[in-house]
Length: 487
Image 1 (cartoon, one colour):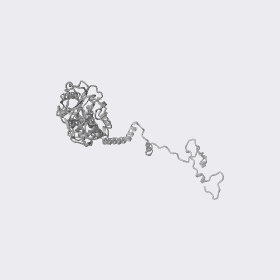
Image 2 (cartoon, helix red, strand yellow):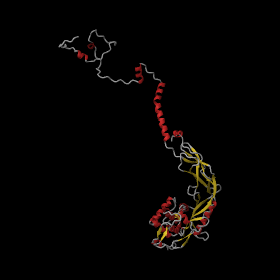
Image 3 (cartoon, rainbow, N blue to C red):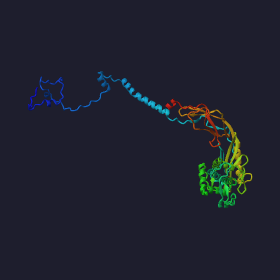
Image 4 (cartoon, one colour):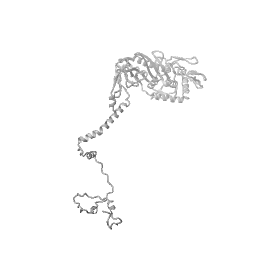
């Protein structure tokens, strides 16, 4: 139709612009139930609007990939089956699992290896054949008898604290040499004589040596004075020189006793003159073992006499020194403490020198001259001779015997052998321990490499120690061992 210029539309009618600017959703003409408008009629005017007018499109949920693929290819998606589901899951998880396996293998391969250990397969003890030896324990008082590095014969008497007299000077000498060590043969620093030491030179019934205020004596001479001449005044002088006062030194004595396991010992003075300084035979043996490790102590204890700085000779109160291998240590006698002796003696057995140590305390008068000193010396001599006579040597392992292995911690083991005959020293009925001590064990080493020691005895300095070496090559764990370790 041609629109006449300037003509105004009639009332109630819409212009073409208004009619064409509005979109109205229509039902499909082919839908059943929809009446077809007459031919030539105005369609928009005859179709009612259904529901609210939609001004925006609502998003549809995404379709599964197979449905989209089917729309594109006009091919319906394959039906879901357990097999297809399993295959799809395998395709998804297999790369992830492979990645985890690779990471696990790398981590296992580069983890630090466990430290190798040395394990004993031989018997961990050896018992000497025969019955226990008959030890002549004293009838009274207390006694104890050991062999350094091997073990103990035991003790006699009730081990209760009793006065020990001048045997207390063993602790005084031990402490001085522990805190002021002397090399073999050395004299050490000079110690000034004070007025109190001179005054106590003449102290009635006490054992002393004469010293003069203002003079000096060497540390070694001071040790000789207390161990050989049993000089009380020099023992007190050493205490003041070391700790500043006798009281402070006594505190050190009791601390040292505690450290050595001397549970039944109490010191109240450095000389032992006080009856309140008490101990037992067993405790004094513990101290003797420690003191005999010091070279200067051993040298002085073994002297039969010494000359002081004034030229006076002083014989050793321990008259056993110098015979039958006796090398010390100290006597102690008072009317209240009775006779006391701590002793040490040597014995050559099995190609090595063994040290017997022991103590007798609170011995009543007896012996060759019926005195308390003679009683202590007689009882000590009997114990020394019994111990020396009981000692015997036995070969318990021959060179090349497999005694254990090195465990690499991942299941690998390399046998180890002793590099020489293992000989044990003991006495009938004694059981000695066998223990391993590994060195800084490698992860790999050639056969013959020493990897530790086998110790026979109580583990102290006198125990038998034999090197052990690899019988075969020690190989570092392989990749499979590293990969399969769990711990």
